[in-house]
Image 1 (cartoon, rainbow, N blue to C red):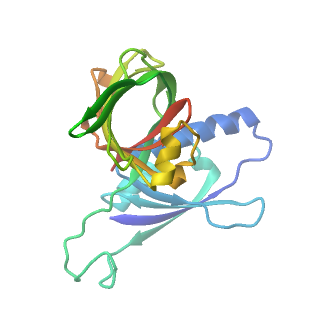
Image 2 (cartoon, rainbow, N blue to C red):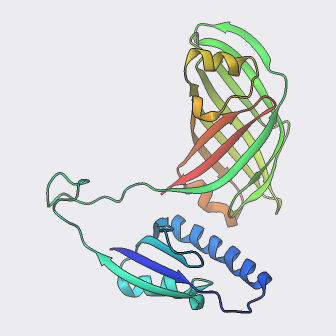
Length: 256
């Protein structure tokens, strides 16, 4: 079942700023967990008069009772007035072609981490039948996300890249991450970077180009031996990339 849930936040007067910050951080982590479990689908902040904080969320749960349990566990539940509206399928829903169509949930994206990596001098392998091949080492960097953060492991990370005649770059990107807790993650992405010839030429010269001027996307697989992060082994992930003069940025999302 799907539910439209409205929240009106009212922080008690006199609450210390440190307590507000602690609860907001816990609330963000709880939202990430609910999204990963498939309960929180979307969230919006509607326009409201100054001083009012209202939030609207689309939730999924097996029943109203299950939803009530999820909402009761929210860290700032006692600061919120909550309204719940159950939603039913409509025969004119544009996502359905006929009234009795078996309903499938739409995909949703949950941020996992943002990696900012530095790159070294490429190893140029020359022109092959498939394209111009080179290896671009990832020499360092940091990543941060709602549940995991840490650093990139230099010497165990690089992009085995093939550049086509039109400037399109096909990436076989493999890198190793170490979390702040010491756990190791192995990531492998199959990516493509393409766009107008003039834009790709500027990227090829090492210029900073706004990521909105080209497309840089990848399908990513994450693996780890850490029991506490086993959910990474079972996820489907996509990444959005951006190339800079001295590095590269990847924002990776869990597809739910």
